[in-house]
Length: 264
Ligand SMILES: NC(=O)c1ccc[n+]([C@@H]2O[C@H](COP(=O)([O-])OP(=O)(O)OC[C@H]3O[C@@H](n4cnc5c(N)ncnc54)[C@H](O)[C@@H]3O)[C@@H](O)[C@H]2O)c1
Ligand SMILES: O=C(O)C1=N[C@H](C(=O)O)CCC1
Image (cartoon, rainbow, N blue to C red; front, side, top):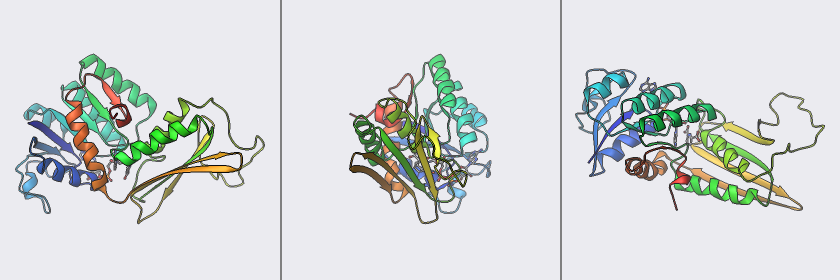
């Protein structure tokens, strides 16, 4: 049995994660961390199954009170960073879906995990299709160094570019010689027209109601283009990855950033 705390249970992802844990035989939801409702149980909140997991508004107090193996964080960038560090310091393995972490954040948290000799997973995208899309993009970049990333998400998203787009750019950077794409004399007549710049590549962020999570990686070569696209149409698409991450983090002793390191 893996004892789990979920931070952000009332969010779009948090609700799916509560349902996943509730329906997985070897998972037990021992507490949740919410922005409100301290002292209640999850069962008392509308729309939740009859799980008598206590609600805390502070992760430290939660981990001082309940015995947990894993904290699943699905909150906001600043809260997610704080929660990851607290979980590590309390010896509880974090599985972090929250995005908006910088490379410096990842480096710092990796060091804390190393000090504490404890496993952790930070996964910008839990959907297997998205992980494959990133892997395929990395493969293609060896042959097509000219690439632009277009990520499209719902308009309630806080961070841009998405964690997935940033991760894709990092994976491509590992195989692509660094250079500045586009015409050397190109000039934006409206600021931002060419998107965000990452090691000479461009990342474009689209935000619209109706979208969930989507990404295209477009490669250009002589007389040809290659487009690799992934679409998540609902949040259930992420849950088999969350389950895999919770099971896998129990066997890790370091921080792993990205599920692509953990799948064959
Ligand atoms: N890794 C993935 O596959 C994946 C998939 C979808 C979303 N995400 C990321 O997950 C995060 C959550 O996404 P969402 O769509 O569920 O957002 P959401 O806004 O629906 O939910 C976030 C929840 O966090 C809660 N929260 C905020 N501060 C808190 C605090 N201090 N303590 C406890 N809870 C707090 C909010 O009340 C809210 O319920 C985002 O960073 C998003 O980018 C990742
Ligand atoms: O809904 C979101 O927000 C998502 N964020 C992730 C990201 O930033 O890459 C991916 C999936 C959905």
